[in-house]
Length: 412
Image 1 (cartoon, rainbow, N blue to C red):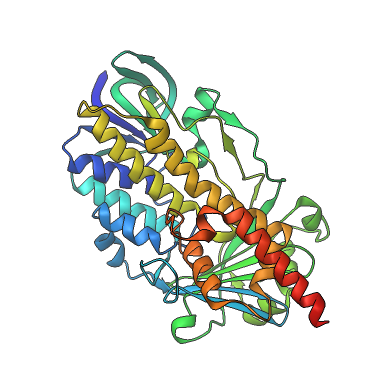
Image 2 (cartoon, one colour):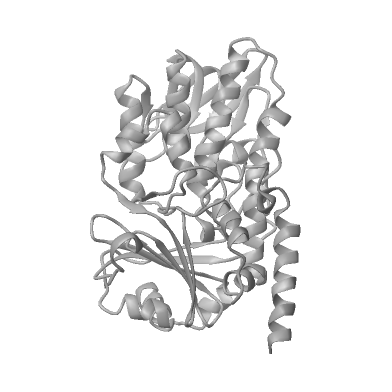
């Protein structure tokens, strides 16, 4: 059986669902195919305030708010007895002052269910096995849960398949990441001894004395996501099964150990290795990539869902114009725009691991205005070109870290 649609969307996660919402609002016929069944477990549980703008524009914010996820008002970075506390109420860019910490199984299903309720067809347990292009669009072979195949004729294909990276694999678009190989080991726990008030919902990022970093993300259901990120060499220093390994790592950091002293694992620990990935191009004739199907950098600044929603938003708007007969320049209108956000976050990820950002975060004489500008980046506003810590991120962070390092030497 051959299905004909205007747009085939691969993946029903945040990118796929939000793109579907925007395209459906303009009256296009859609089909969303999703390899898994929702709800399903995935990390990337800490949103950024810019997500709120994007969810609202797709008319999905109300559905998310109804889930009563815990409010995230900022981020706390800890290193030994040093603390750098960012509050989203004090940032350079005019934007949302809070966002949510979300169990992704619940969050992603909320978005997909909201889109399906509007009449968008979502086929779960359905994968893409082949694609070919012609002057009018693409013919895509999909595989149903019973392993039977069928074809979908689409004027455009938007790949929001996340870590599955469907079109990058089928079209040989993948390229190695420029980041070293790192691993993430993580689980959910009960018994987290949380701060109170506005501080309860903030993510904690603890710099482990041995060279790793740890995340602590609280949920409204009483559970907390905890994980450690490091090189394989670091993990090799903590032998044992994953649960024992993660427990030893958490308890060997003073800040994590104090907060998680009474924790109990509620699921087996899981590991992802070599998660960073690159891409040769973000678009082609009759297709585009959005979300983690493009590039995934690193979890340290929780940029994944923000980049997914932002790229899906931009892709949907560009597809709408193209299918309505307008002339579209995908390079300048889509790829360059998306890469600006990716590259801004890339500078911060690089700065985190090479020491520039810790130098800035834990400096004794932090400049309040500079910290407000950096806070806006951590809030996801990486397209605000009036912010020098967006447009000149590499240079600005490097220069500031050098100045602060010199001042510390003088003080000594």
